[in-house]
Image 1: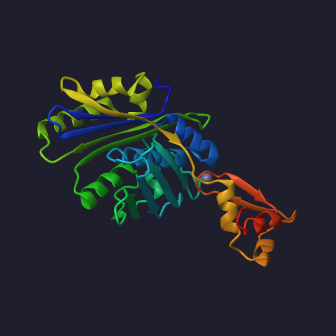
Image 2: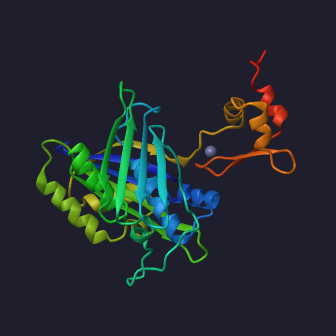
Image 3: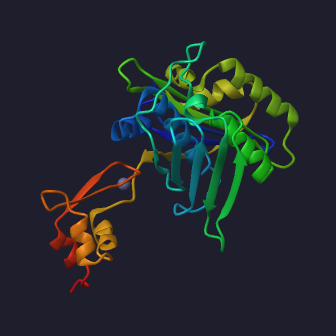
Length: 295
Ligand SMILES: [Zn+2]
């Protein structure tokens, strides 16, 4: 078993094939606890969080950001994840309690929960003048297939993507992770075919992760006889950017009447962060005080 969340990046000997592996069990379990997600919603959100982190593999700066938004016609509603070049991610599903019966093959019905009609939108802000964005229709709502389709049509990069979240009987996340293989220009087709067959033979990525004690071992297993070099390793964590002071300043743009209108029966304004479900409580006086510049 792998005991920390991290991402491992490697290149094959020709330099044309990039392999990225992520272990994300802890951060997906943390997200499950924060959002109190159903089994299927944990799998859907966990896949999107892991995918967002994998998509940061070519970021140069820790401030580079990618956001993924799934808008399907299933009961989950919208699923959003935002990951940074620093290895942090945050995200949510708009209906965390939505759930569906397992598929006939006993799998969590992520495609049904997300929906098969709709679209996925990716926005990358890597410090250029304009953020890059692309939007493609959903293929299956199973997340990985939809993002492969995104890479093909929006970025013209052939991609192999596997995402897995294994939910235990007590609803906790037993294993979560992902694998992304991308062919760079001039990639050796033979190498890609060999990696692909190894990945398929290995079965579910979340199960494979339970069998190894490190991503390095899993990478070795996937690459087999092929030569490769590890080019990067990064810790991953769920981390929200919200904080009490910033929200207080945002609230202070309201008038006194509006602020009083936001109060509950006890005269307290409660604000919940979508991304991490953290609740903040303020008295109207605290908000109004934030209007004045600090001495
Ligand atoms: Zn937050």
